[in-house]
Image 1 (cartoon, rainbow, N blue to C red):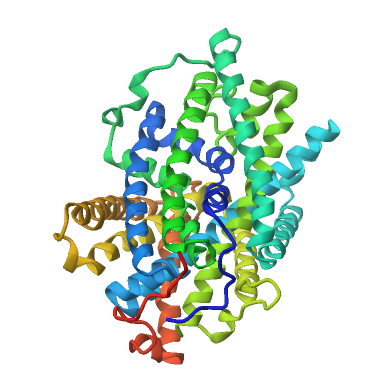
Image 2 (cartoon, rainbow, N blue to C red; image 1 turned 60 degrees about the vertical axis):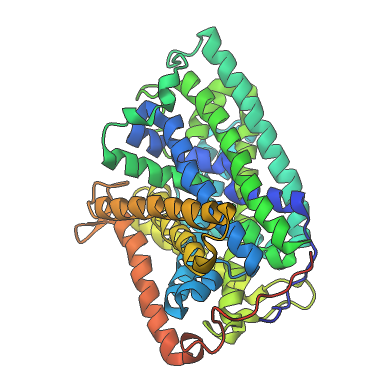
Length: 497
């Protein structure tokens, strides 16, 4: 196992945690997911977010164990290959790539919405916000955001780090201001939709059906997704093994605390009704903060627009690191054409892979914008399927890879067997239930093709496409699939501590 040409020692623990939080994009994740999740579970919104965190943190432990043994920018692809063989490993890499392409297109879409909302607030002209409804202009603006993200990401992690510190800090600060102002409005009673706090919101037993639970889980899992970028850059961190693993779990815990605070404040000030700023109002659901910013923050509402805009822009750029490095790793081991493994001599970044990831995500958004009535909602639901697939596969890979050491210590029993298996099983169940439910055109926005729900076609269809691409790759480049480049006994890449 040889180095891939990436520049090592660029990021410390704080920088990797900031990169992880940026990739999760709290403001973007919440504004996109709160509405659909309320539709699924109602008042049990905090409960489902906490329940969804459990498999996430359990999978994070699996990632940390695998990273300590075999730090590699290919993450799921590399580890699943070493555990289950090249065919399963290739599909794991495909799942990761598909999830990132979906979310990159979604991030760009949210960035477009808030860009025009910000312009409307800045110039005092509400008609500017309606420009996002112009499909050609919307798609052109989206492609411009993707191009900018590709440019920054191409310039390497040093440039990325400088951008992230300012944007993530601003995003968290504005969410803090929103929490305080929302709680103040709720307590004063000047918001007609406000409701009182209740501990029942944290009781998952009050979710009425398993279908609702699975739909809520699929959406809530989405909001935690992104912390694994901390492991993707493990070859470029200071002390790659320890730093990347710690950063992944730290990011997940920090995001949970922020989410619960924002969710409780939002529910108290807006309620879950369908009137006014209620979270079940169909006009609010695809973009909660766009609806709540002015009523809650008044003249400071423009800060929320800037926070979501900067959060989506920074996440668009930081998330670009994950598919680019996955493409690089897959190419490095012969699972993709060698062009993807080219690294910029000047910036030490996977330049060609970064450009290709940007082109595919921009193209995917353009197509989805044309065929879907609610592109943001449908892609989030499809993304939940992708996340469950490759996170669950990684969790099971951890247990199988370390199967000979599971009972050698109490620590290994929990970290390599119990925690990964529980996390993997939960994600597998959510994946199966969501796949079944999404076959119906009524799932998601109601968009369909030939009577099949668009969410199913995106999620399961992308996985099926993966098998086709894998078959073509096997025909063109059989060496990887014959175990000639990456096996379980392939020595781990040595990264300085």
